[in-house]
Structure formats: structure tokens, C-alpha cells
Length: 192
Image (cartoon, rainbow, N blue to C red):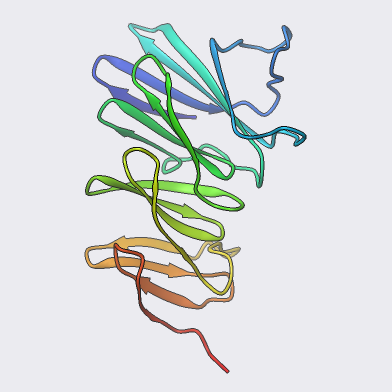
């Protein structure tokens, strides 16, 4: 569970793995549901959002995605002025605050979106296969792919925003430095 403060509201974001869309047997029935393009696909991840004011729920929604599974973590959500951005599977959802209306949904990776960060007036998304920059309207400004996936099994840091660019490490331990326009500055890839 992740908590954000926004004005006099508390935003709670939680994984809801057992939630079944349309079922009366859910522990909590969200007032709004936002689905990624899941026709014919089984939902992989479900993230619930509740907006509280003075310890009372005033609004709620659930975002449901397909693709590689995601979990809620400190960097998988972001509050930017009057919007909440949340990574769910291969997509980023932008929701208005506090009413949780869907502003937009963008597929920002072919597999999984792990983290989202505000950079100047845009968003940088750390995905499994790609690093993507989105504008405030969810339009892709650029994408960057490496030779392998941007994950690590030994807890090595694979994504770091620095003052002059983004430092990346892929699964094969190749390191990359890209600028904030998605251009490769250098890498350690062994070309044959």
C-alpha cells in the first residue's frame, strides 16, 4: 500500500489481486473501473485507489491491466498537481484528483511499467523493455530500448535519473547513459 497526500485528501493505492470485475463478492466495490485493452486477455494486475477526506472515502476506482504483472510500489505512482499517475502492467493511467476521472491511458512499454518520474513538465517511465518519455497528455515523446531487459535479479540499481541524463543497466549488465531526449550518450555494449 502507498499513501499520498493531496491538499486535504489522502490517496491510498493498493494491489487488489483477488478483485473480480462486476462481482458482488469483492471485499470492496470501487465506484469506477478503468480497463486497459483486455478483450480476450486475462487481467494480470489490479490496483485500487481510494480518496479519503477526514477518514471517509469520498471516491474510488480500480485500474485493471494485462501484460506482465505489476505491483504497487513507492515509484509506481506519482501525484502531479491535480492528477494521479499510476503504472499498471504495460500502461500508465492518468486520473484527475480528487474525482478520479480518467484523463488518459497510454501503453508505455510492451511488457511492464515499473516506475514513473516527473522530469520538468514530462513523465519518464521505467519499463521492462523500454524507457519512455510521455508528455502531460500521455503522448509518447520518445522511447529507448537496450540490448536486454531493464531488470536485475541481484537488486542492482538498473534505473537512475542523474542531473545530466538517465543511467541504465540491463539484465546482461550492459550500462547505458541517455540524455533527456532519449539519445544514447554512451554504453558498454560489446559489438561484434
